Image (cartoon, each protein chain N blue to C red):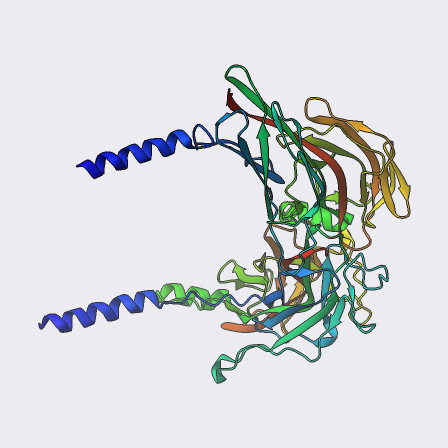
Length: 287
Length: 306
């Protein structure tokens, strides 16, 4: 019995002598942002002045890794910055040239806790800035008059699928047309490009040169107000600022051309963008 | 009866039901297979697209009257930029002619219809790293074919018809048997038993045409199968050529080029005059429907840039 009492006293004293008041942590997580997810953990959740706070950061590129093509789906020029450290001091910025698809980077900062005269909640603010690229492929099918009429009569116009594929990004561009596909040879068509922020962060704008696309040979006389033809590519010629998570729609016109009964090609669109995630977590600091 | 015997009988009965095969449809030249050797591929890699066609009908496919043709998304065999599907060799072409005639099946000897396999060898297009695109390929087979109906038209003289009626006998009925093909031909005679006299030796033979092959009919002798130029206008579609062969019958009104509107059956009415028989007479007749026909199959390949 005497030994048990001694053991209890030792355990209680260990708690009192612990450098930090408690060992539970505060965690911020954003796992729903499409391209990059974040987990930040501050240990402990309540820290005494003069003691150390562990600040653990984890960034994950959510895109699928292709083992044969490891350089695809990179997120690059990644910067994590704790721009408001409250009463803490220590390293606050870290850069990664690139984070590969499906890769997680994790690091730990040890911050010194400054003096406070009374217990307070301290919001640590941090932002993650990165560059990423969105890719879209959208098929265009043009039928000759004969083919169109024949399929129309047979009810098989819908059997030619519109193929659309795009990458998993915080920014998404979609293409739509003034007419339903498949088109008929010689159709005059309006094409619309819409841009949307579907992530959890902020994009200010798509800038000149950031968006470009190529068109297949079954689209001729292409004319776009927001794009200039440059070396076979249509390149964005103006800044598109986002408002309420949407950027102004781009409109193009073109005429269809069928070189054979079924002439199918694809528009390939690329959008490079800079994205910002701004977040915070709160730690209690005691004197 | 022993329980185990009952069980075996039941099992046999069930298996007989399960193994019942649907009647063979025999729809002409069928595309049995149209597949790529890889459904996912990186840029600038070689791909083989293979198509196998088989003659499932009852008529020979003449190699000089058939071709297969590849239609594809973003395909340009002559492309040097690499941004389209292009050819691995200068010999590659979108259209391919048949290496030999494809004979019909011979069920009596247990021989299936001839088949032929065609391969296109392509290079996948260049895409930017991170870009993925799914391209659709459509393989078509164009060929000229015939569906033939053969049978006997029975006609009676008035006196013979009276004799049959008074003796409560039965009339011989005209009947036709048709070969299998993507166009179905049904023949009937109206009235069912023509009774002819010197003043009225006219009756009607009806030819009902149905497109049951799931493809498109086009005019014969329109395509140049050796050059591979596929140029069918709307006016070339839905056209068949009908001939009515019988040494004794005089036929009008249903032969030559006829239209078979897509999605609908067509009935051609032939005015037929026959020599008045002394009693009854069966006249053999052959109705040949000639047509061009194309069918297609599709497949997709996903390309990833790198």
